[in-house]
Length: 351
Image 1 (cartoon, rainbow, N blue to C red):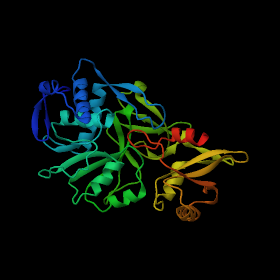
Image 2: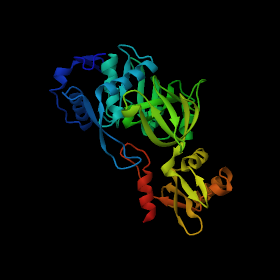
Image 3: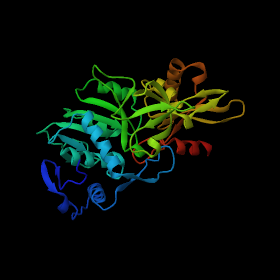
Image 4: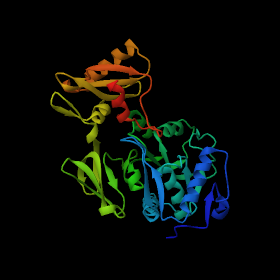
């Protein structure tokens, strides 16, 4: 495997890396991409990447380039990508998911269709199908609004996939996958098929990767290239076997109310099909219960909508899962790449 090819194909044209390293762009997203190309070709054996901040303060970590390359090759093998296949790069290059699209193009000799991450995809060329792309939820919504979907395989990441959106995916021919990923593992280590006759409700590990549970029932990832060969997560999991698993929620999000443990992600999942507005389950201190469940709705306060939502809760949730309060908030706290920031939510609820 050649870590540093002399050329990369961009939008159908072979580009010299040497010439790209001399380029500058007025467009911030394009300059960010050029900066990553320069970082990949510098003398260091590692790249610096920033975590998303969804579970804590964003931080910068380093990943060895050969470790990143191994991740890229796993994706190339899984999606059966071959030289000349077109892949769409529509993610910010400052995050690991965007960086990996470029690395995949380099190693697979793929045709990288490079576009602004804020694009609505309406101007994408349709002379050649896109064999692989990765998007976050907001981008998927834009993609589904197109008259035709021209992507064969679509990887969806960044946050949990809403049930209504997952139902929409059943209507398209694009093969869609949910990713289980983190910055520390150089993107996804496992995928879940979301649509088609072979869709699943569990994640399948990629090559040479397996998982196990610790004493808390949290997922531990075993893969080559990690320090001590493993990385411990705070994701509560359910194992089918070493290579297939379900994600139940994060242990640090657990709410204990009246002595009962609740996973907000599971309650949110029960409400997913019925909710008319973005929402999240949180908690506030309570003298009797310790914590009480509350439902936060993104939008302006509206008594009619509140009544509708309360009725949904009554129908879909058990007695003990019922939120003690329904509140409206102008904007739910999110990270830069769109994930709900539960840490900031807790800070907001304390105020």
